[in-house]
Each structure stands twice: as C-alpha cells, then as structure tokens.
Amino acid sequence: MSDINKSTFKVSQMDCPSEEQMIRMKLESNPQIKYLDFDIPNRRLEVYHQGNAQEVNKALGELKLGEKLLGTEKAETPISEDETKQKKILWWVLYINFGFFVIEMTTGWISSSMGLIADSLDMLADSIVYALSLFAVGGAISRKKKVAKFSGYFQMALALLGFSEVVRRFLSSSETPLFQWMIIVSIFALIGNLVSLWLINKAKSKEAHMQASAIFTSNDIIVNGGVILAGVLVYFLDSKWPDLVIGGIVFAFVMRGAIRILKLSK
Image (cartoon, rainbow, N blue to C red; front, side, top):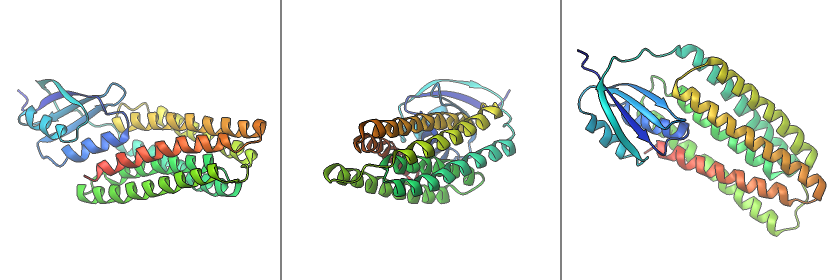
C-alpha cells in the first residue's frame, strides 16, 4: 500500500500563473510534499504528500485563495512531463514578450501612445512571471521571493508612472498619438502572441504552468486587439481619448499583476 496521499483542493481564486507560484513557494519547501498537479482552468489542485491533509490545508489557508479540501485518497506519485521541452518553449515565449516590451515601450514614447506603453508593461509583467517560473527550478525559495519582491515593486512603480501620465494628458492639451504606429506595432505584437500561443499549444502539455501560459497569452491577444481598436478610433475621431482610455485600462491590469507578483514574496 502506498504511503503517499493525494489531496484534492478547489482553489476559487487560482486563475493565473501568479497564484500557481504562490502555492508552489508555500508548499514545495515542505519535504512531505512530493508533487503538485494544477488544473488552473477548473481551479483544482492535487497535492501528493505524506502525512495529514490538514497540514496542507492549513498552509494553503494562509494564502487566502479560497481553498476547499474536496477529499484525500491513497495514490502513486505521478511522473513529470518532459521539462526540457517545456523550458525551451517558455524561453521562446519569454524572449517574444520581453522583445515586444522593448519595441512597444520605445515606439509608444515616439508616437505619444499611452496604449502602446501600457501594452508594453503588460508584456513585461508576463516576462517577469515566465522568468520566475524558469529561474525558480531547482533554486532556493528565499531567492525567488527576493526576485518577486523587486519585480513587483518595479512593475508597480512603472504602472503608477503610467497612470500619472494618462491623468496629465487627460488634463492638458497633449498631442494626438500617431495612430499608424499604434496599429502597426500592435499588429506585430498580436502576431508575436499568436506565435507564442501556437508554441504553447503545440506542446500539448497538461502541466499547470503551460496551461497558465496559454491563458496569459490569450489575454494578451485581447489587449493587442484593444490597442488596435483604439488606434482606429484615434484615426476616425481625430482624438487622443481612445488611446488614453485603453492605456488607463491596461495600466490597471498591470497594477493588478504587480500586486499578485508581490504576494509571491510573502
């Protein structure tokens, strides 16, 4: 009879890679935890562990993610998927996201588009989460928390600067952004995200971080579409307002991401 238990939890607030990382850092330092199997779309977590399930439940409760223990049974520890292949794909996705962060940030300032600048920070937020996932493998939890803390505050500072610039442009007679840059650069960013999503889906992985990456990238595609739409509206209305509105909305998402990353450092 196996001495490994499998406890299944419903985690109502687990909907992106940040929550997954919070749970991993909380549980993986415990030697009794042998394997974690995440199902982010259905917000379910299977914990393969030794000892009492209540200890796991208590640790999860400290994260305040709305956890609920569904049941515990005897089980064998599953075999992990090919991590080398997954890492290679995630590195490509990281390169694409960080590359478009640089491109959109640069062209955003040149074209005076807050939508492009905000989208670039959204790309940076994704890059940070992917980097944390990759660099954390085999690394110390304490080091990962330090990186998460620095990254979260850095991203929050950028988001606050972005918000202040949006407000300044709302209140002043700032120039109308160059809609051509907004549309063209966002189309290329959209293509980059579609390639990322294709790479992730090509892996056909059931691992949580791969599923979470697909969700993240799908959200990015929606944001890209929003900036393209804002560029079209800037052209037809000859107004800066569509760009400022989409910029403010995306900065809110970036701030939310920064708060989630900061939770990883606790």
